[in-house]
Length: 244
Image 1 (tube, rainbow, N blue to C red):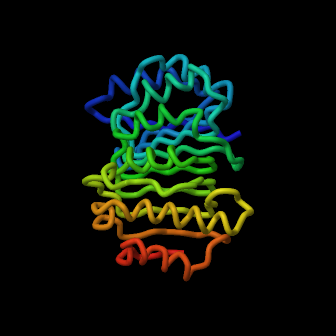
Image 2: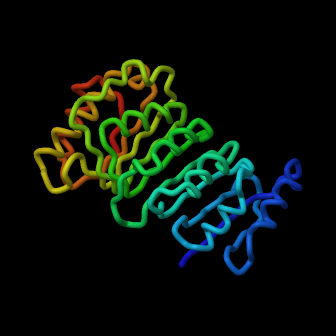
Image 3: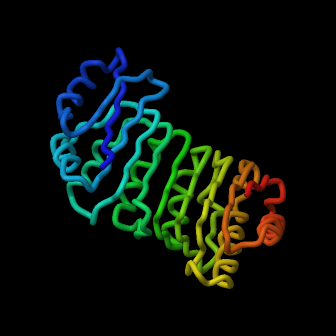
């Protein structure tokens, strides 16, 4: 199974990072030294060796990174909770949270991911999660400071129009991507269309988002291109470029 941890060493934090490296067993993980522009940390959370590493990390926060990727979330447990809450990088440009090709509820680690969201500077990506109304609203609100938000192969339930009129104040979100996502039940065409419209109508309640959002990348077999464009136009998002 693919198992990688990659961490940079900067001069300023060289000693600090060396302490982290001492926790990484060569027969369990591979790590490399990169320039600060390519520093990344990738961990598969379900493998036993990762669990051992997490326990050794205790409350040690990772250094600043370019990318922080969490793969294959296990059933909720205190060890993984603590790792996300206490060992998350002090600052990171891009965060990826994903399951392994099987949809699973995001709620197991939702609170922890929302708590660390302010530390992400530029991009956030969620893959293979089921996300309900309340969770979608809180995710978008929590990451309103980043420039790009990606959802891929997610099932997003938006049974009612979310109100973003106050929660997206001063947002800097420029790109919102929804690749191969479904809205409501995956196979119900009518429900997909209705809940997608609820989602867009909700985004349209934010005046600041109307000013900041430049691009929506939407790919869905359940939605017609013309309907997507019309829905955006009807909700004050006619200036948003559509990429399919």
